[in-house]
Image (cartoon, rainbow over all chains, first blue to last red; front, side):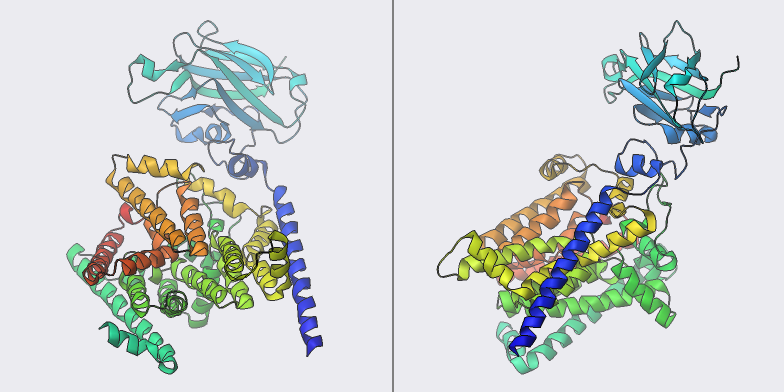
Length: 200
Length: 390
């Protein structure tokens, strides 16, 4: 009888250790989820504004993506990675001091590209420094106009990922302009963007 | 009345039978009243009589999807297309799915029937738990009435986890009270596979074991002695280790299926809301201009007061459980707080304790009557798919 009790005890402690080990294993596994980049960015890191779907960040060079309420806008909507206001009829405003767009190419890019953008409107006195993978590539403001064309040097690419960042200077607070219920800090109303190979 | 009630449930030989009969009667009568309210609703609104379909919507749709399709690899729900059915835990859809396949009956009919049976079992086990911990037939009857006729009781008869979750929670508390730790562990494992907050019951177990040690030990020997005494109890050790099994089994499944064991947690982003200070959420609600927000915040406040009363009553494990189960949803938003209060059990117990302490038959009668009337209002608004019922 005492032996049976002893066996039960050993089995219980053994099972408890087994369970705890399994729990720890599952927790360790949870630290490194095997998921798509889109999943990681949207659900785990919260760095995307909208769920693009698995593979939804893929960009085919030469595709013009529209930022407005246009139904074709989905591509641009997917890859916005923070710093953008709501969609409007003609485009989308940058909001705050930094706005980003993320492009994933089907393969590593090893050539110079060109970024072409259509700006709908600049808030008064606003300008933006444009960065590709944290490297400065150009500037945009009233003087550079609304049709922007900025080369992206090959050495700033070298991977299948491109993060375009717009560092906005002097965004305008709508509350300061008299909009009592609206304190968004807007900069540039972006109409569309396109990245393509640079034809020499 | 009180003496008759005591007599009915006092005799230990007949007590079990009487409690079961009482639970079945309460459930049958209350559910017949549901149907009656629904019948009036259909006449008034001119809609088609489809009780089980009109009773089961919102989250019920997610569970139905799991039963029909299993867990999906891709999110598909809501406006942003980012919601997914892996936010919902598997035990309830597994049970309903099993009986749906077995009987071939419509999913919502099976789900409502099973959930209602769980409610009957819940009343039986809650009755026993109150008799064990409070030794009050009146309180046991009152709580049973609230569970079957009271506000938000409708959630106990649909494809929502409420009745299964609360049944398992009460089983854990009951077996913990009776020191049947292996049974407690098994109920806990099922509980943690029912809803994401289920695993939190492990803290209540810890607090109860500690409180019992502090109260029973004639000579306090300190932390080391407590650990030694606790770990020497192999049934307790295994029981506690079993509790998270449901949660971790689901995590392992999600890891295998889609590469992210915490997918159930990560997908919460689809329902919005950042995790923040629960008291700030409560305060914002109380100062809101929306009556709904004020009502939800007031319910949250009532929850905190009840948890405080449980502390005063030295029911520390119930108080800890109450605070955890309140603070988790409150840290995100006020939505669904009344449902969580009723569906967590411990708040109903604490509220009943307060009423018993006040010892006013008029007040108790008033509260029970208001509860029943409130449930009819809840039902009406539920059938109208009112946002107040979310």
